[in-house]
Structures are given as C-alpha cells and as structure tokens.
Amino acid sequence: MFCPFCRHSDSRVIDSRTSDDGLSIRRRRQCPECGGRFSTTETASLSVIKRSGVIEPFSREKVVSGVRKACQGRPVTDADLAILAQKVEETIRATGASQIEANEIGLAILPSLRDLDEVAYLRFASVYQGFESLEDFEMAIADLRLQHARSLSDSADSAS
Ligand SMILES: [Zn+2]
Picture 1 (cartoon, rainbow, N blue to C red):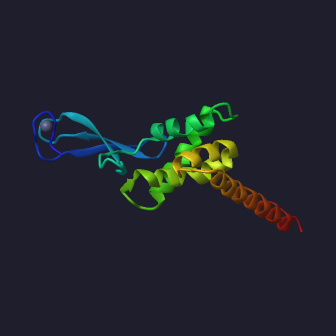
Picture 2: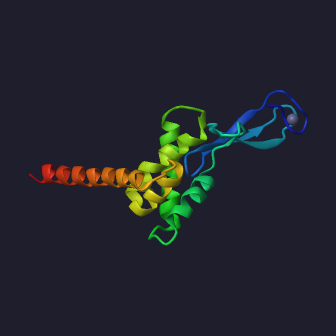
C-alpha cells in the first residue's frame, strides 16, 4: 500500500505482531522515501451474505446477541456466550470459506448451544428451524435423548 504521508508506492515492515486472539496481524511499517511510520492490520476476511443479499463482515457480537435471547432465564453467562461465539467462528473459518450464508451461522451455533444448555438450544432451534408443531419439538427432544444415550454408552465403553 501507498505511504499515507507521501504516497510512495513501497514500505518496509519493521515489526509484526499477532493479536492476542490470533485472528489478526499488526504490522509496523516505514516509508523508505519520507521515513514516515504507520501501521496496518491484516485479518482473514470472513463475510456473511444475509437473506436480503446484503454482505457484511462476520461479527461474534451478532452471534452472541442472536443466542442471548434464547438463553433468557437460563444459567448461561456472558463468558459462556463469548466462548460459544468463538467456537462458531472457528467452525466456520475451518471450512476455509471467505463468504458464508447467514443460515450457516445458525447451523454452526446449534451443536455448541446444545452442549451449553438444552433448553436454550430448543428455543433457538424452534425459531431458527421454524418449528411449527409439538411434533417438531418432540423430534428435537427425541434427538437430544438419543445423544444422551450415546454419551452414556460412550462413557460406559471407556470405563470398561
Ligand atoms: Zn512516505
């Protein structure tokens, strides 16, 4: 990129450091022409295509606010929600995609939320997957029971 002071077309990196969350790199640069110093931040781009077609950057805050409603009155802390949003971002980034549909975020949220709180999970799933009847809830609950049975037999296996 151009030097912001003199528009020289080249700059030299004098320092690079990764941010604490590991998601961005900050570089300190110096212009060889005028000696001016400036910083750049580099992040892997991840954008979300909303149902309306609007594209916006992925935001963990939006994941948290989307899930928070489903967690009202449940023993879920802000820290739990922050970890959930981080897991969701990692899951999506692991696919290698730089653009995702908004509904894929919902899909990535469901398994993490199920591990966190099953009531919140049912609430979220009912809105996100558009549950229309008691049968939809019954099927989701039957799924949860199946997961429980599996995890019980898993721990029985590892104990024997
Ligand atoms: Zn310069």
